[in-house]
Image (cartoon, rainbow, N blue to C red):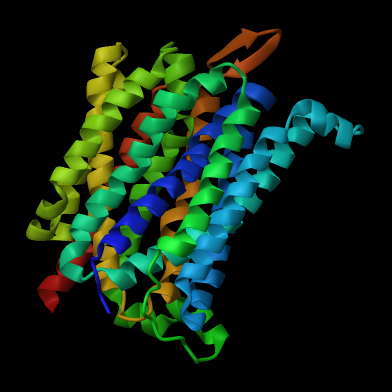
Length: 424
């Protein structure tokens, strides 16, 4: 039964926002922590992002169908949040000194880097169980097609609202080296929201699946399903290409603003960009439904392309804010339109079956290929600086140009979808 009750919306917004706090810390601050406190080798960042993406995808492949099978989305969501928060808080204890004490035969930096990657994978397992597998399926279960553009428009701003809150209120802690307290605050918050969700969140009314579990697990990878759900898979390919383009620059964004542009108050830059971009996303939510999701993707991608080109050429704070606003507005609009289209094309009652497939296209492949492209571009630029006798590599504007070139490839699946529609 579909519903848009107060409890439903409150639960979705609360769990969605706090989940994005955890993802923001993983996707951006783990990178900064690794870079500033452990090693500046971008290869470690690329390895961490890739390993996390693989774990996230495998977790969602398993847990999505399992939540379908048991018909208990709420248990997976809230239990996952509780453990997600505990693993996030644990990050503050991973330091070069602690790693050297635990593994005296290995260099402190190398051991700590490996520990960060491993703990990131543990955190990702719980986060993907709660958010990627169960929460995303819960939203598909709970909202009608005609409301999904609006829902996705709201959900699309949550990552940026999350970044705005963290940059504006808590970034000073990271600059002061208060990493342990920083991770502890958000770990406790995520766990607390998991407990609140057990009380507040309405259970989705899906019937438990009784079919063989292995069949459910592999359902989305069957050639017969690819053929029957061609529009869904073309939408996923478009999301994959778009997400690769994003991952070329996104893991290195804060480091670029801070180290290449020299903006120590990068929270101001990101704050303005995120506020304006969020407003644009909310205002365009209903427009996505009215125009049509896939028809909206191309102009939105064009906006993002302009922003990426601007980020490549511009250097001053005001020009960078303007270019960043255009880039992130386009990013959020493409995200909202593609996610809404994917939900529309997902077969009724099988949302959990397809969450793992969605993760392959939107997370695993992009987060393996994108950061690797970005790392190669950064290393190829050979721009470095010396700090306390250590040579450190710096991201350059070329990451935005590489992202722009990648983004152009999204034209291919969109053209194929248009041709498929004309043939029908």
